[in-house]
Image (cartoon, rainbow, N blue to C red; front, side, top):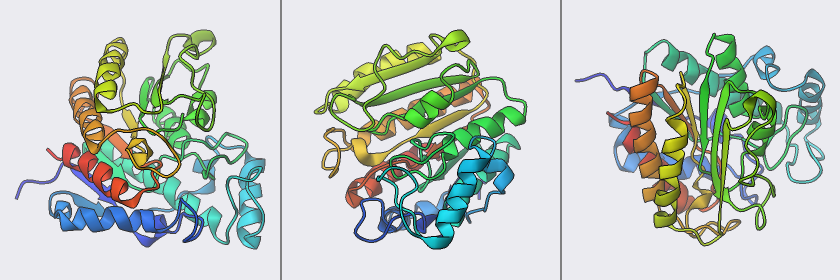
Amino acid sequence: MKKSTACVYLGVELASYGFGDQHPFGPQRHQAFQQAFEDQQLDKLVSVLKPVLADRSVIELFHSRDYVQQVIDKSASGKGFLDYGDTPAFKGVFEAASYVAGTVIDAVDRLLSNEFQHAFIPIAGLHHARRNGAAGFCAFNDCGIAIEYLKTRGLKQILYVDIDAHHGDGVFYGFEDDPGLIFVDVHESGDYLYPGTGSAEETGKAEAESFKLNIPMRPDARDDDFYKVWENVETFIDRFEPEFILLQCGADSLAGDPITDMKYSDAAHAHATSRLVEIAKQKCNGRLLAMGGGGYNHDNIARAWTAVVKNLIS
């Protein structure tokens, strides 16, 4: 049997990153994906791997030491919030968030070593957390940690693409003046949706001016709208020579999500993934890591993320 070129990470350690059964970001999100993944027998076509715990030193590549200590302290008590009211603390939140970050770093290592070309992690892509704080259900920003880690491995140019309905503000502002991060974000307009950032005028600062592309979409945007702006995405990417691609593929941009207004189908996620697979093949030896991101309708999670995995299989 031909060796799979893709891997998918599953496990209770990832599922444990959530804020309870009644919260939109609850443990059932992992199960919704896993059930569909197995029902469609995708587990027979990829390598299924276990989550990995991150060392604190890796987390601190992106986050401040003081903030990491704050999460550790809140994790012990399980009381209060990690931010100003969006991201509740729970007992074990430090360990759960560390598993998300560590799993992303494990995937990065496996792709860099050419063990796999593509990887998918359903509970990851926590793109709102800032260097010194939590935000928007995100304790640690595994995307930012991965970018900083890739830089320690000697990579000079990294491409981050985000199709979650919410703007990836933690990544954008964490690297706003860094020309080593090529940033693309297609999201529901901040005029309507948290975090209220990501206008088309935000294109990077200092040496990174014009290295960032933000595309705000109207709330009722559909697949055809996505396909049209995706042409601009590819034109933008073509200017650069990334050595690694990160995709945050939040399912909350699909029609029917309870906290957003966009109207995509899973075809938008399939299109973005298939095109990035080709771009990765052309530019960076196939290295593409996809992270689940948001999404609070379980049927949408199942459809969008299995569509991503199908397009990572080659």
